[in-house]
Amino acid sequence: MRYSPISRFRGTFLGAFQGESLASGGIESQSYLDLGRMAVLGTESLIELGRLDLDDWIARQQQESLHLAATDDISIKIIIATLPVALFFHENPIKLRQNLLRVLQIWEDDPVVRDGTLAVGYAIALALTEKLNPQTIIPQIISFIGETPTSIPKKLLIVQNLLEQGAGLSRVQAEFTREEKLSNIIAIAFYCFLSTLEDFRLAVLRATHNSNSKVQDATYLGSQATGAITGALSGAYNGVGGIPVNWQVLLLQKNSPAWGLTSFSQMLELTGAFVAVWSGVYDLSLNSRELTSDGCEVDMLSVYAAPRVIRSR
View 1: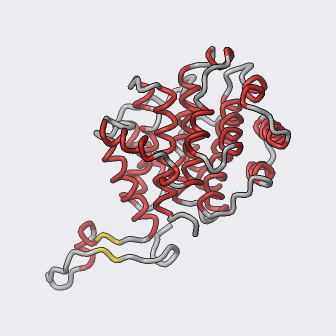
View 2 (view 1 turned 60 degrees about the vertical axis):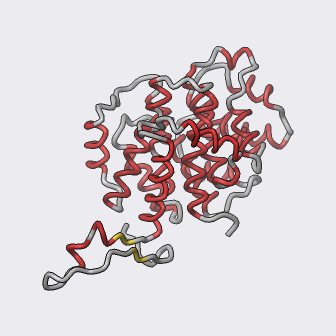
View 3 (view 1 turned 30 degrees about the vertical axis):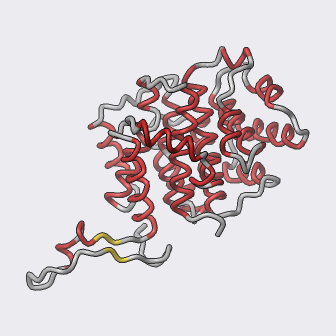
């Protein structure tokens, strides 16, 4: 395996956060703090329960008073919110699709959000299973999405054609920034990712580049979304080691709140716990009552297992 699962899991979360951070220019607005908050709550639910429980997700969001009404930015937040589901079920395409569609039931049924979620989630799954081929990924994603009335498959095919032609960023921006639509954001994110597949830094810098006048007119959150989606895709493919060390050090030094968490370090700890649950680590300190006999205590230790050996679904 090229990169370890924990490197790719951490790369996905940190990549999304870093891409969003670059787009914000360091300005910690409310949207900056909220964009990935639903993803954090979903991750915490999967860690605690070890399975996808929609009622628990809804309860956590209601407790946080997150507004899920249809707004200009809710579609983008939903796609980021589904990242933990894509990671947790990445090994099995059938379960991946089923659970991505299940979690989308929490929010308003929007075909574009659905197709965008499936496209991003499946690309991350291909990266984690090391089956991502840049020549075939677009047709694979379109097949995974299935029949749909949205324009996302068409726009992904345009991305593929532009990549084959060696089109530059300005041409792609001119193609997809006529309107600020979620489908255009997804198309540009896939272009930035696939055109600089092995270079996380360049991918997110291109995704958050604002020299084009039409891009400057795009909404602030749209720029954050492009950076976050590109960062998640590239982070999943290149692992946390692909994120420049100086960028990581800067985040650790600032240690500022991240997606509603108290600090950036807490995000790292959350990712570690998430990988542990996915991989089958059994924490006896959380389940000691189940492992005592006649009142006898057992030593507190963790049992590790290979993927698919000990893991509830």
